[in-house]
Image (cartoon, rainbow, N blue to C red; front, side):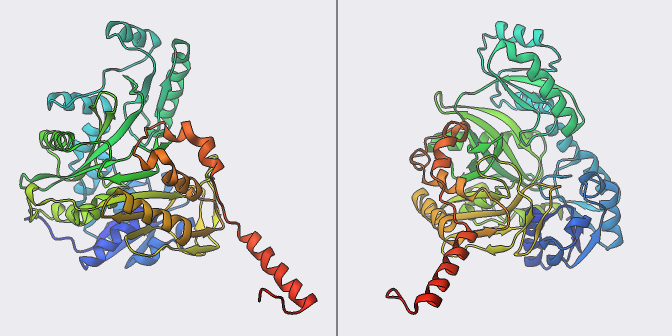
Length: 485
């Protein structure tokens, strides 16, 4: 049996910090929040039992500052750190620093994080575990290497050049022709250096009309490696997900079982513990799937898996960190609902440009089958320094149609955000699109249908409502009571 978590520091902000704190409240574990100067009035600060300022707005001075995180934990008597997602969540150096400071790290071993953070090493380990991988070449430095590989392996355009380190859609460039290769290499190398401090690149065959399937795995320190089935995260903008669902509408039962047990086999091979996700690209034309990466952290979309299985994944991470064996086996996992998640980002739904400011009005959705994971409140500022995610909206139903109906009601009738623009109009257009409802879409769905989706926007403007009220008041003042009254 490992150590007991007495107080937990959440090394994050916004939605992930609030989510982790909810489970800690259930477990009666006191929490410590960290905040940068613009986040001093953020929701996660109010939710925690204590809070520590860790620096100014730039992430390098606050949420990415490993030393300040450790100091904050030690100064508040916190003996455990949960990184959430983003920032330091997949930083093996930080994970090792946490353990070296005598604190409990809520995550997989630092050595596993390091291996899986390198796409080249991760692919090598996947091959060793007999997991299908996308045809590709590692250590790319010049266009000649790519052209030679394409010729030798009979690979046709398009291809994808990727940063070997990191993820989140950064350092990824699609290449459609031979002439684009030099510029794509330069762009990918620049983004990789800027985002991850590592210029190493790899190149892979691009799967046309691919679908993203990821398998949620949880593992304890007693040899129990269990999958909680899969999620589909195909709908993306700029290589970043905005809609997720569980289970996947792309898979039949045989494929579902095969892909889930393939993920378990890989995680067992690499010695994984706590919660993690194995991500695959699924070629719907050939019904083949290929390994993409292992996300060595809590995923944004973990909530849809919780809705269909009933398991608290953050709670399982805490159990694993304390050395407790899971009280269930694979045969005990029986999903019995369908769940959807929409990421409400503070962005212009037409351009995806960030929208910063103050939330002047916030009406949080309620109703049957709805779960909200929010990181803001009415009156909260949206600073320009961090990720634009402000809320996750999840709905569940007996089947996919039920879940879609609940999501439509939630986005169109019950949600109201004013003061900043959000992706809500785009999300609603997607959920109402015939192809989405039929389950016929790929990673290119948004770019292929963007004009059509925008044409369906039905935005409400609070200024128009105020003018309408003013018009009624003026009419009554001038003409007296009206027939419609």
